[in-house]
Length: 229
Image (cartoon, rainbow, N blue to C red; front, side, top):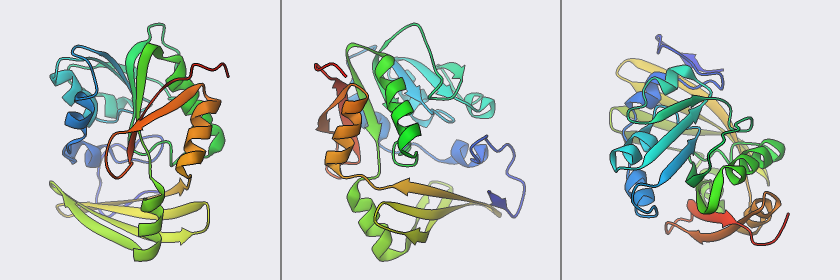
């Protein structure tokens, strides 16, 4: 459970402090993803949170739908159509030129939920559409296991990651966020996959790994597979 030394306001069903995510500034991800999309693409972001990516992509001229299970998160969307729903239960009639699954959600879901996430991505893709997703690559697991933690400043938020436990296929860690005199700690588990295993799991959902977007292999593009499931 999250721990706070002072009230941080609303907490989402999965234990996230909305104020922390509202205060975290966007990095270069929106520009990175924006270069992948044709102008005025119809975009679906699953697990959009307060809209760090969705709002920026809408500002670039894309038609963006943001999905989150937290109404408090969705309140911060700007220029984005909000949909309150879980990723795995989402059923929208339109399909999209691009589906975005960020925040390493693939890596922090166990196999069954991961499969349902990827199924949701696949069923919302238009013909020729692309999935752009973020995960923890194997190098992340090696780094956190060796170092035991790390800290960095992201805009007004100080973030400290501490290793709790690690084995061959998963890492449990805690992230503490500090804003002014307030703090919030959340524990999470990340599941290690090789790149080959990722490709297999994408295939099970009818998707095919196409290419890596960045040098760290933290972002990738996938499309519907030509082969039937």
